[in-house]
Length: 112
Image (cartoon, rainbow, N blue to C red; front, side, top):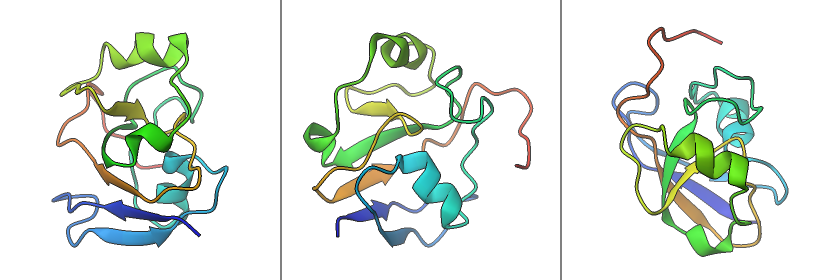
């Protein structure tokens, strides 16, 4: 089974994490199911950028981003060439390493 490595994030995952990542599950769902409370203001519907992550390893294994996801990503804080909305990035066969950006454009952080 592929692994998802989450690099340390000061608030959400201070120690980092290595998670078993079943194929076909979005990165966001995997994080939430493992108590890493990534913001997801639109409830995983590709309508915001609060679940933005940077894929450090394994980016090419992910399905290509849709036009809708690309349009949303243009608004993300700290956008890189390997940025994805974690609600849309679905685990395939390869291991992944992600970084959760320090900031989002969400003005009011909500506890889901």
